[in-house]
Image (tube, rainbow, N blue to C red):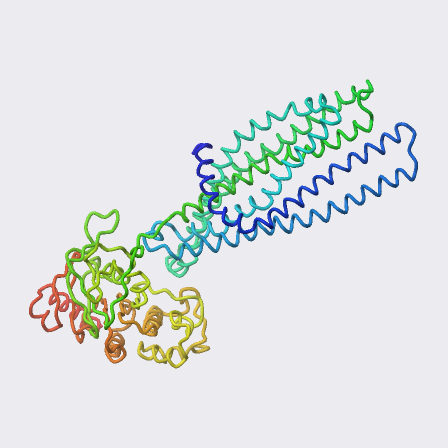
Length: 592
């Protein structure tokens, strides 16, 4: 990655914070004005020192004159302190406001993205962006901006004051500065590359730690603690080495800046001393010139620090911009059609779907009708396309026009929200939040009463077990429901979906951890709980689906057969074989 290219991307990425600069421009302008005032007040102190030194050198000093100079310096120092507080409050506050708003926009944008994005972007990498990278942007927009403005203002003003005292001596003092500018330009490109690598390594480290913590039970079951610790240590050492490489570049900039400043001071002392001896300038002028040179030394030394902060900020801003530039694969139509009235009926017409990067379609020529009020079963081998069909009905992936119709309207003509708000979806891998049981069941319906929550739990045969918890429905279940069994998690997730009270309920093999008898009771109870609604149940066990109005059989993405249980036993050899194998397996388990 070359410096020019990175600079181009950095310029484009600045578009992320331009709205915030405009929004908080009064605060920013006020802070910069206070900073300018500080710098101007600082320039007055060397003039007062010059006056006092010249009075002393000419023997014209008096206690009153020196006291007046001291009082003036004291008042300037008070003004400097007050203005410094103002610019710190305004400018550093500006950077925190930008960080807050950018984080909010980043989070809101993440919520608009869909499954394909999150399949490519690890959660750990996203967390690193929301923490480490945003902090780098905040630092660049706070202290980086202050240091840059201060260096520019103070550097220009100090040079002007030095030139007023002696133009020739000023030219001598700035001789080493082009070397600093050249080295800063060269090293800034290296800073960008190395900081980018540091941030990427931090993302890997974060993602590995997240995976380890979320999978801690499996890790312990497989006794992999030592190996995980070793891998984490290796990632940590790599992160440390990348930071050291970055520190080498940063550590080169700062000493060089100091060397340039001290070289200028050496030249001023040598040549300025000769000017004093030759009476070209007064002793007071010489002292004031050195004071101004000290004021100029900070801008020279700040060049490396500012370059480092801005390169880090621009690099992180570019990484954030990559996510902010991502667009969802699903989008609302330009002119969405109002959702058709009446009970929801779903029609699949030669539905075809293929995942990106895969050679074979996940679904091919699937046609069927899901009528309102039906409980429909969906069976098939692993990888036959059952979950894919559920994802498409839940509007998580784009489909071609003419594949899915709701009440006779192509699903692509309807807004995403109008479809999703009519679907209650329970995925295979159920997700519970680190909250109470009641909060998890009522997640999609925060206004639900305790009676409604308990009614849904009773349908899912989990109510009695919840009452047995230490605090009943107010029991906190830990991250992802870690305190619960697999079957308990699945039934709580199903109760959450039932409480939404939506026209289409999709249960994607999310009762697999429940025993057969309980699964049959739950499915039987759904018939009374879902009048006029459609329920699609995916299950790897056929027995609980025997009472379904219709069962669809998928094989290699194609709809092999459909009908009720008896019809399929009579007409589908594939279904009959699956059922017989499961029956034999069930008998063997009972005998054991």
